[in-house]
Length: 392
Image (tube, rainbow, N blue to C red; front, side):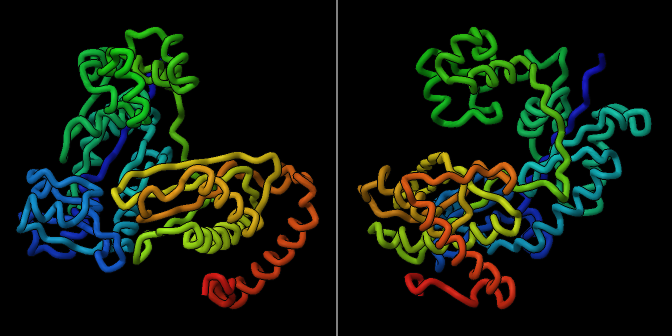
């Protein structure tokens, strides 16, 4: 059985690269795309290679970036252009395969296993794509070539910008086992802490550890992590379909001033839940769980989630559940810079389980009828046509 040939295409410094295309006089200067300071999104969203050389990092406040590089030029994001260029890049990819899985706006996996007869080896296809993106779009691309998605992604990260890295079944131990465990996809800060506690620091350390030990420390994720480290990941490249339903729906905000009390958070959750439930109704979906996201004034990020036996697409119910999760987990040790609410564990109407939990079924039905009326009004007159008095 032949190995698959998977590419991971990563558009280099995408936001900054596209922004400079529309500001060509900035070429060769340190540039960062940043959020609005007036709206308190004053952080670095992306930076070009020159800015990187000054140690500027994504998500750091603008003032810190300016301290590192006083000559730094900051630009606002131009999302419509980023979406346009993302689609243009994907149209180039489609010349070589129809098996394309986006991973964010600037990254895609491509399965080119069936394309080699026409276009050559995986490395040759990667070279053609890279050159076409540079010539036609004016931006650069890094490509990882491997026999699975995890290693292809690792390859595109290893050498940037404008580069191709091949990780084969024959060379992967030599190429990647010496790398930090954190370089492996889906390995976050908490996982790293647990791995370091048992003396695991590199990808090779993971591979040499017993799978049973990793499962004991990390649960099911331990088994996945072990398989990923030894190249035993067979997940397919999944091309999105028009009929695909979202896995979750959420909304968040960085407010003009810090959240300092529960009532401000409750008002935000009410607003979020109406947006979320409007989307749920459009997709004929119900939420079986709620996730709450917070970011403190010191930029510490925390997330809390809970699943429920009964499904809902009622905005008031979703807001109440999110608010209870928030109150159970946070007591305002410091102000909050931003908060978010997300509906998770989504199911369609046929699979959603509606139960009379705690005798609240009649209240739930009443609230659902109110939401039905709001949904119809907003579809007819626009989303801002009617609002809760609390949010005025």
